[in-house]
Image (cartoon, rainbow, N blue to C red; front, side, top):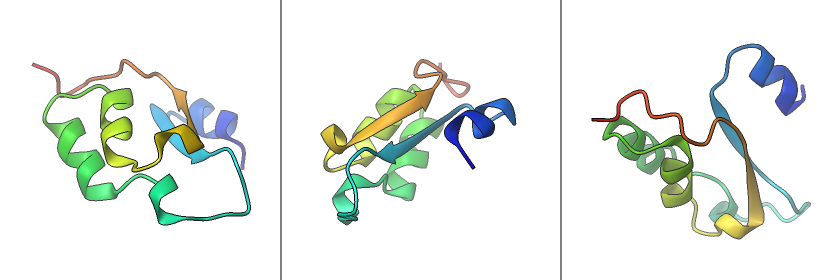
Length: 71
């Protein structure tokens, strides 16, 4: 399934690595950190950025300014 298919199905945003096959854990979002930031009002981009140790190793697709829980 491609990222475009996820977006067409209604996903707001997703983050994935851009260099393979190295699957270092630092390249992927930490779910608890991601959700905590998102639920506290951060945008999707901010929440993903804060939850990934190596953000330069990935790409965000979708709506980066989505903040449904923003104040």
